[in-house]
Length: 374
Image 1 (tube, rainbow, N blue to C red):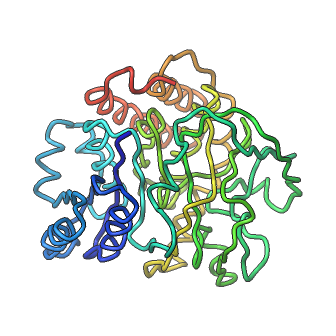
Image 2 (cartoon, one colour; image 1 turned 90 degrees about the vertical axis):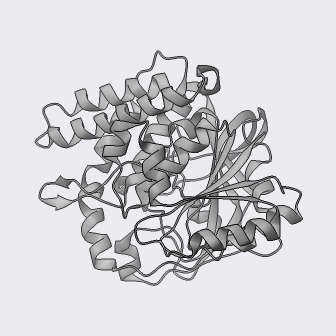
């Protein structure tokens, strides 16, 4: 199976040298890195990527501003939708990866640093997209706190986007072995884990090894957020892992920082429909988080947190008739718009549904239908 690593950056991505060398050392020398720049990305990034390619043998495919503009010229709606100077530029690399026929897309952030001793690519893709026996975890609440697989200096904390009403309840993890097909592998993070701004303001949380389990695969209808840092997507799941464009107002506040979280609800609803699964655990990376204004993060998270569970409920109760991930994604867009048609912020949800339709149009243009089947 073909695999690529996808990232965005506004820095010279020096950490990619370690990723490329790690891939070569573990027999993944033909790996391609897709690096999506932005208007803030330093001019030396292209030269750095070329140097790493020569050293490692891995292809370092850098998209500067001009190349992105040229590539997106074929996708007019998508080109108008995806803003500059935003994490949503990741979608440019994703549509490129889909067009190139990659079976697995590993998405990382440019502050996720490689841990020594791991086979980063191998730990992500081994068993991904394969129907086989899995260590399954289910809970009483229907929610699984993936940060609970690690130790922290604070005690119990929850990943960004975790339903507020399901926090601080006894999940009572229940284990079994079952035949399932994981199509998402969500790696975890030491150091600064992916938690919400409110928790970060309250306490400087640090996550630590060891993991309680190398991998845990979630039972059907047992949910946990999926983000786009240190996460591998397979097949049809990759095709609908569009990172939602943020920045629009809801109740007078700018909405942000839930772009990949809402993606995960769309994805989980469709995965459950097809009986596919999400797996959490290895590989673990060290997140040395880029500098953030936590109060700005909080202002941008609050409106999304307010409507998060209403959106989750629409996704959990969605009905699908489609035979492919993309068909179901389009059906979900219609159901989201319809479910919020009388909401005071109905225009916000119409725009969200239109984003999903824009993405589906682009994917349909580059992906054979057989590659999107559930």
